[in-house]
Image (cartoon, rainbow, N blue to C red):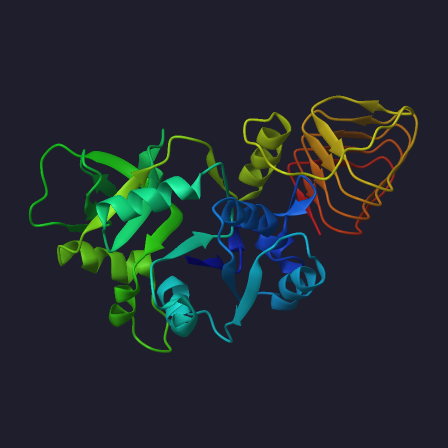
Length: 330
């Protein structure tokens, strides 16, 4: 089975950070978010993967063409203009056609076991399987309703004619398995969304669409708060992720959980943590305090400065005696 990873978006809710780095390349425990997506695919023995790109595409392509940390056969689909999810997979029809394929968003962190989703799809034989979950705040997501047998009977305003009364409201996780018949529904060379256009019509047409209920960890990284939370959850081991090996420093106070990457200079009397990730080649000067924050590569924090609840972009310098709270600094 092949897979496509969606990585073409602008990441507008994470601006201004996404002005300098596309969201799929945001470091999570010191590795790009996209690397964690690749880990999920590798764990299910997926080998052939295409990634669509548009916003700052070279930063994604160049990184993974140089890195050989995965066994995947990677391909990249450059979109000169945003095509939407359906338009993006239509562009890669020749690559994906021939059997069911996995489609996954690049801006999520999850502990999903794709081999179980694949087995569910093969057992029920739908034309589309959506990985869904129950959420404590379902009203913030588009309405999806699922039956006890897993069949989806309502999707964002479109209902099955035979919709039963007793259903469960769930949310879509951005992970799906799609049969190639979907290509017949997608127009060529123009913007088209799956959740906006294709999936609701499939429900109306009584096409068999099923939902695999994921009960484990899932978080989207759509804003700074969630980005910080994902790193905190990983540091707390609420979700198991591969990260860079931590470095130890005796000259400063490290309050766990925290992660300090390679080649960092950390002065005495500085305090780092809890829930903080320091990228490689950072320079933390004396009496600096960093809490619940993420520093990208090459950041300098001046003497006596405090950084809390913030993300500092690559190679940025925070001067002496500054107070940075709940900010994205680029």
